[in-house]
Length: 89
Image (cartoon, rainbow, N blue to C red):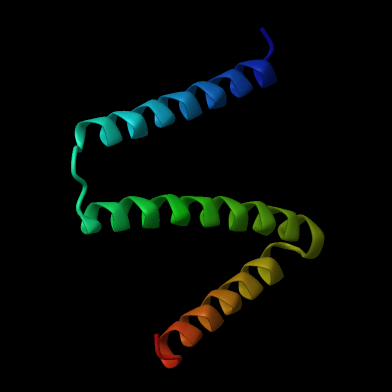
């Protein structure tokens, strides 16, 4: 078996195991509190946003270079932080 096929199989297996772990957590917690729901939803949203940004960062490194891509990524993160701090909820 060649390496790309083995790697794809491993990623698919890890995705399936992650889904099973999430289902077991949902099965064993009968009455989740708002704190547990907030944590799990925030964690899953953070993971998805991270995956999206890392994909964009890799493509931008290929397009404009490592230094400029990481600097603009950092500036974007700081702008979002400033918006979060200075604009009331």
